[in-house]
Length: 170
Image 1 (cartoon, rainbow, N blue to C red):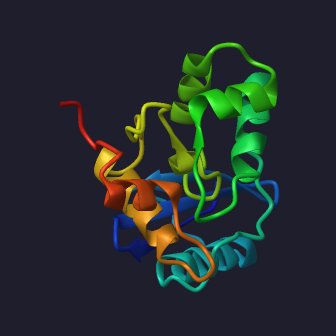
Image 2: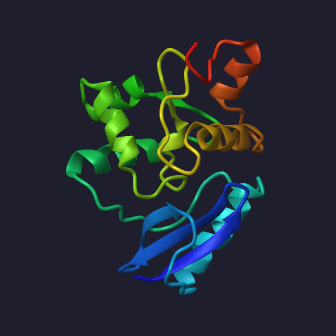
């Protein structure tokens, strides 16, 4: 499986391709480096994202997962950059009664950042979990990055400035 790694403010990440689509984004350096045209495009778009000049990705994605997980991931892709939704919001959007199931699908997301699971927060204003990078600190970084993007400000950032979001249990 072709992979391409890139340096980001969050450390190295590796994007993997299979059958002409992105199937994974992993933290750390990949073993098999191959700059296919798609992986080079993904690298360029991710670098633009981290530079604050891109808010949306234009890449074919094919995450491996259950039908329910893919439904959740499709709902995540509909969240605009600079905005957040709660786990309950996503549950309602996919016709699920359990917000916890949304958290589990988020945790199983094989293409974080490109499928923006970091844009999902808890109903009580806490960040909720994040399985990528350094966990909560990575999620906070991504939300803050998107809050600084042209035309957008995350609800998380605005609420944190007002003091209504806690980033760790008290």
